[in-house]
Figure 1 (cartoon, rainbow, N blue to C red):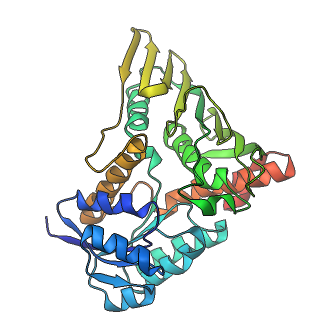
Figure 2: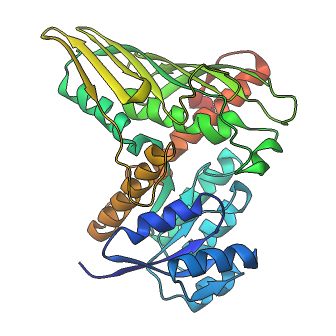
Figure 3: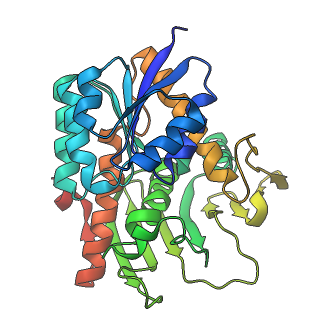
Length: 344
């Protein structure tokens, strides 16, 4: 396969994982990086041997010479950067959350479609090995037809030390973490049409909510609960594990601590470990997320080469982002929100 060249915009906390992931793919080379902070630019450039370094996205695109762009900046810049990529007809990956508003996200999809370029949202949690294992069980029909599910991420981990900006936003856990859990719910149970949510702020030193509980009514009749917390002081810290419970017509599935998967069906009960790989550049406990970064980037390269839409395309992610917007709207109003009204 011919060498695929990429550019990275944004050299912050998480982008280092993406650079490692790209480095692991034999036919991919990141030939340019961009960040407004010259020190971050220097650190990432030196670590990964990238000579072309820019402090301006416009200058990066003006020089060109790459087949795709990986946008790893904060949410406020996403629309402008995706539209810039579209104007240069460069395929784009955009970090989550998709955009500041649903209208911005819709405009980004329109821009990409108008330019004829693929747009993928870096929604990597559905690519975690344990979540893929859960999906495989559902696809095999081992527990029959699912009718109820729960996606749970509860932790007391200090995420603010590595990403201090998270403590300042009026929106926190649903936009930063809940978006992943909501996408997992869509991945496992299909699209949802109704949302009821409640939120709370337990940590007095942050601006946004750090606890959220969301009830989803899925189009196929499944009811799911998505609950997320960064205020849970547990005897054993499970970060960054996502727990899954699913009840089906002929059995049950439970994904628990330390990636233990228990499946009960007509043929009996099985237990297995569906742990992620510890990649050479990864570190515990982040290795679950880090492996999913490598897997979604591999997916992007395969779909780009085949000229096929990625699974977490901009168009697909509008459904996940609409759930985020619906959750905030529901919590604010204290009522159930229809997704049909949001998506139009």
